Image 1 (tube, each protein chain N blue to C red):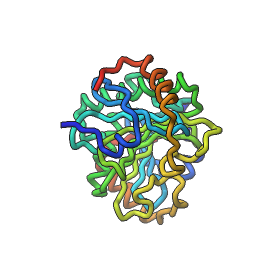
Image 2 (cartoon, chains in turn green, blue):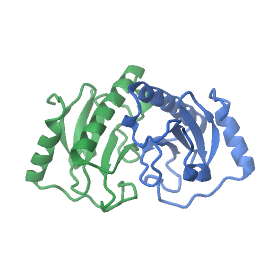
Image 3 (cartoon, chains in turn yellow, purple):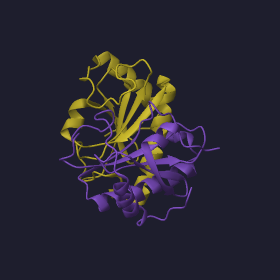
Image 4 (cartoon, rainbow over the protein chains, first blue to last red):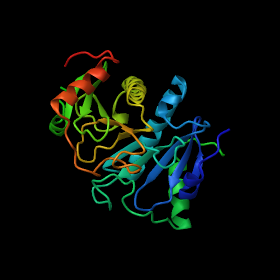
Length: 137
Length: 137
């Protein structure tokens, strides 16, 4: 059974479910940073999903990518499945700006997270959720 | 018309072409590191490819992923489209080991590349090319 990894749970806010993936907002106000987690147990690599699941994953990734790039007007999107520390398959989608704190470096391990206020989380969540058809957990 | 970005060309060896992507071996002996570059001009984000091209891209990514993980017996695969410095869309596939120099950090910007010898390049290229059906440039 799928259960979100405790580290992802600690670092993020759950926005809702797409048909395959849970959509998370990473609680770091330095970048608009979203994560897709396929709701499948014991999967750590993309190719361990079935062919049809992989297809759905990338459709959901493309939908989220276009939505967040449009909403935040980013300069570049970084899409990555790394998982060296958290083995549960999760795909980062980070909107990057040429004047963000880490540019042009990748964001992972660069700076400690700076949490949003609860007001900011509410605002950014509504902004994204209003553009996507998400189911509750 | 598609032309490989000069930086990718400088850092890599071209192994051949899959139906959509050019397959590169990054010239860094610290990790088995491969890059897929869709042979389409002026594309910097995955979602800028057509739906059918995206589908082919991820099929090729999955094929390459499984092949290199099997050949090099890695602990984890890192798959990433970053492109903050080189805007031409390219998708990294890095086989990671728990005892590699950067583990568990991502590899980008971590350590300077250490080039292979020409003998090593020949060996690793043959190893991978023998497992894939690649066309010449």
